[in-house]
Each structure stands twice: as C-alpha cells, then as structure tokens.
Amino acid sequence: MDILSNRIKNMAESATLAMAAKAREYKAKGINVISLSLGEPDFKTPQHIQDGAKAAIDEGKYFAYPPVNGYADLREAISAKFKNENGLEYGPDQIVVSNGAKQSIANIFQAIINEGDEVVVFSPFWVSYSALIELAGGVPVYVKGSIDNDFKATAAQLAEVITSKTKAMIFSSPCNPTGSVFTKAELEAIAEVVLKHENMVVVSDEIYEHINYTGAHASIGAIPGMIDRTVTVNGMAKGFAMTGWRVGYIGAPLWLAKACNKIQGQFTSANCSIAQRAALTALTTNLAPTQEMAKEYLRRREMVKELLDEIPGVKTNVPQGAFYFFPDVSAYFGKSDGTTTINNASDLAMYILDNAHVSVVTGEAFGDPDCIRLSYAASEENLRKAIAQIKEALAKLS
Image (cartoon, rainbow, N blue to C red; front, side, top):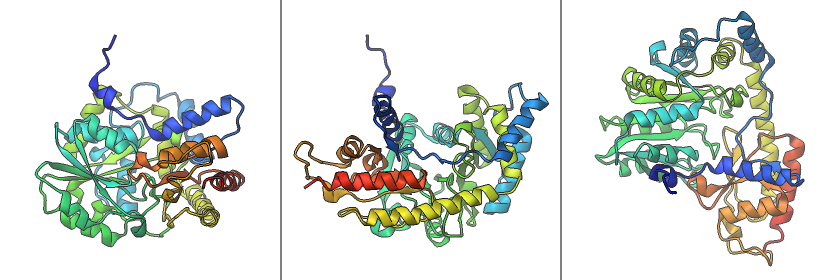
C-alpha cells in the first residue's frame, strides 16, 4: 500500500533530530556517546520560572483552553519586552504565542506562501527553514555567506536574487548554526534592499538574542520603515533554558498576526497554559540567570576555540553568539583510515560518531557541505573529552 502524500515523501528529516536519535541508539547498545548535536542548553530552567509554573498549577485557574494566540497578559509582556529591549512597536494584538519558534515559523510560511513563491534564505541556515518553506509550496532561494565573512550573506547578494516571485526572506541573528551576529549597519543595508520591494516580508529569527557576545543585539524591525515589513520570531527555549516548555512567539504586522492566529487555531490551538505562565514569569522578572548562562557559554566558546585550533585541517571562525561552532572540515574529504573514506561532511559526521563516539551534525543540512556543526552547550568535562576524541579519530585519516 502506498498512500503517503508526495508532501511527506519529499520532506527531509531534521538532521539534528536524526543525529540525536542515532546517538541514542548507540547509547542503548552500551556505547557512551557525547552528544554535541542538539541545540539544547545544559542548564536547568531557573528556579523562579519553575516556581511560576507551580504557582499557576496551585491557583487552579489555568486548566481551560487558553486563547489561541496566548493569554492577554503574556502577550502584553511580550509587547513590552519588544519595545523595551528591541525598540520594536508590536501591540499585544500583534503577538502570537505558539508551540515553539518552529511552529511560529511554520505558521508564517503557511500564511504568506502560494505555490511557487520564492523565499530568500540566508545560508548557512537552521535546518527546518527549507523544509517549512517547501511544505508551504514555496521555493527556497539560498544566498550563501562564507567563513571569511563569518558566514554572513550581504545586502548586495540579496539584491541579486530578488525576483517578481520573491515573497519573503529569512535569517537568524545570532545564527544557528554559525553563531554569526549581524550588526546594525549590516541590517540597515539589508533593509534598504527590502524596502525597494513592496510585497516582501522579512522573517527575523532572534531566538538566540540573549546569547550574544557582542554587547549589542540589533533587530531589523527597529530600522525605520521596517516594522510593517518584519516578523520577529523569538521564544523561551535558548536564553531561558526552557526547550521542553515549547514556548515561541512572534511580533508581526497585524494582518499577518491575524493570519497566523487563524492557522494555529486549526492546527494546534493554543500553547500549553502552564508553560505560558512560566514564560510570563521569565519575561517579567530579572534576567540575572540568563546573563549568567551567557557568561558561561562565552567561557566555553573560548575554551572550545582553543581546542579546535589544535586539530590540523579544521578551520574555524569566532562565533559572536548562540552556542555553536561551524568548522570547515573539507581538508579531510578524500582521506581514509583504511576502512572508511570520507567523501563529504555527512561521511565525516558518521565517522566521528563511529570512531570518536561524539555526535555532531553535517553542515549539508544547514546549507554548507564543507562544514559540521557542534554545540558547546555541554559541560566543560564533556567538551574537553569530546574534542580530544575527535582529534584522535581525525588523526587516523590520511
């Protein structure tokens, strides 16, 4: 029987989740695998946020279905956060709370894309962007940044690929997988290009906003003329160590917020009531735990950079945010240990899993086949051990 849709047959599996599943298979066989594949903070959700969720349960008021777009007080808090921290003027009715930022992005593309519409994707990119665009019937158009420019695509490159079919562009800053951060000047140049094209929306993924080592996070929606053309995507997962709570949100032009609310009402309805109360606590109390986590990530970045620089043939830049390195490992292509020949980054990722017992993700999934992604959201002990084991395994290739 073959009744699966072409839609699902053509959809790529998430490479990060696939590698995490493969690592779990190894662990089930008794092989100790150090996982550097998932973008998941290794910190616990701060206690005051947990307490906010517990208080909500004890109050007994949050067991009915919430409004599809989120509780009013949470949307008010998000609106205030956008204004105070990002200079973004989104009213509460322009906020939609979803089941993670991934659903937020899916809602956006389902709301704006018709069959054959093009979406410019700054590459390297988060693995789900292309799948979500294609699922909505769109065509991803990739604009690739190089490691020599910290993997950042430019306004000039953007201008070259816009056509009459271009409906949107999407990028992340700080970026998953590269850790790159766009400066205000770079965003202004991008905005100048976008503003020349009336029917084009910018999707700005800022989920790693609080893990930013530059001291200055810039939002493209705050640039004059851009607030009505920008959907700002954010959430609680990374900066607040709340991955499993599944709370994402957008600020959007009112027409698009209403469209996303309509779609979400049919797909999943509202985000979990208790998770929303935890998110409200996080957004209305101090950021001290978040800032401490960011300091620790920065310390780990410095350590991991030193360790990676000691591995021959591995080329790295210095990521300015998030918690990833995206090294160029193409120097190992064509090499062999006598049993396995490395033809590409996917081969190398599997070789590292098999021989170093460390899970990383192929850069092919992120739009750059010369690279692999590794997360340093892990303990210092595991990071040191993992990179030592990778170095030892790679030394066997010649």
